[in-house]
Length: 219
Image: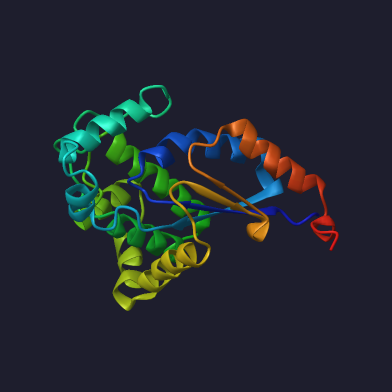
């Protein structure tokens, strides 16, 4: 069987554009199945939300200005609803706790479970307006999903989950990932960033699936 094409997917869980892109990720998995190997990685965009709002959104409405930006960005995407309480009333201080917990889920369970938990937490924030910056809320949500909080806490307590998360953050910097979401395809042969349409993503992947690795360069 041919080796699946690797796709490294970099996001910050609080990023509205990654929430919008979720439909495209679902379609890729449904249509390409075992022809691709999708690996989630996290990056630091909302690691320090108070400073981000104070610096980048000073003079533009602060949290309420950013909330309007998020609502406007998602307005054209029915598959990515956003609760009006997001950023106006519910203001996670950091995305790092959610990223850390998801790395712990991947270590305690597997990649597939971590991806399912990732989607659950994004939906909890954007649709249900739950504070997924709060570790107690995160663990409660994971527990409601049927996961063992004791198993999840273990890699957090030992530092293994933190090491995995720092590895993601550092790799994103080494690859000079511009923002969330970013798709790094086949070891870096293609990098797509931002609000890229599904057909563009699919076309790039299909081209690499057709083209053997040894034909990547003629030089």
